[in-house]
Length: 272
Image (cartoon, rainbow, N blue to C red; front, side, top):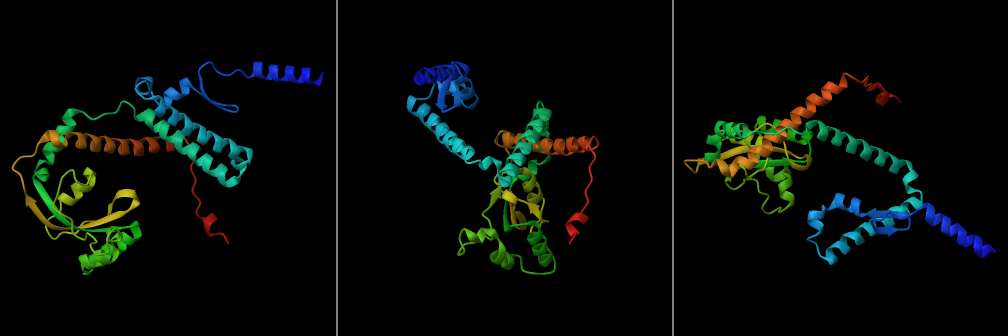
C-alpha cells in the first residue's frame, strides 16, 4: 500500500510540474528552454553551428547551473556580503537598461561626421611623437604634473613613475613612436594631444582602465598632403556617438534628480 501511495505522489508531482515542451537542458528543477536559448544565440546563428558547438554551449550552461544550485543549497545567497553584491548588480543592470531605452534612437548623421572631419582635417595630416607618463590615479597624476610645472624633468619622472615601465623596465616606453590620428582609439584624448605644440605638456588626461595620462609633445611632422575621409569616418562616428551618450546621461540624470529628495550628510563619516 505504501508503494501505491508513493507512485501516486510521484505521478501528482510530475503532473503539477510539467516540463516545457521546448526544454533543451534540464538540471533537476532548472530548465533551459529553446526560447531562452535563442535569447543567447539567435536561430539564424545556431542553425549554422555543429552539434559539438551546441553541446559545448549546453555543457557550459549545465556547469554554471550546477554551481548555482549548490550555492543556493548552502544558502550562500542569504549571506549579507552576497546580498549586497546582488543588490548592487541589480541596481546597475536596471539603471543601464533604463538609460539604454531612453537613449535608443539617438544617432550621428553623416553630416555630423563629415563636419568633425573637416574641422580637424589638419590634425589627420600630422604624425606626432610624445613623451608619456601613465599614472594609476588622479592624485598621483596631479602631483606629478605640479612637479613638472615647477621644473622637474618630465622624462626622469616618466622613467621612475609611468606604469609603462611595468611591461619592460629596460624599455619603459617613455617616448612613443610617431603616431597618427586614430592610433590611440579615443578621439577626445587625441584632440588634446594633437592641439599641443612641440615642447608643450598636457593637463592630466583621463586614460584607459581608470589610469591618467600626462604627455609632452616631442615632435610633430606633416606626413601627408591629404587625409582620406573614409579611413576615419567609422571611428569618428563612434566617438561622436559616445559624446552624445555622455552628454545625454548627464542631462538625463540631472532631470531626474528634481523628482527625488536627495540629501548628503558627510557628518556621519566624522562621527567617532
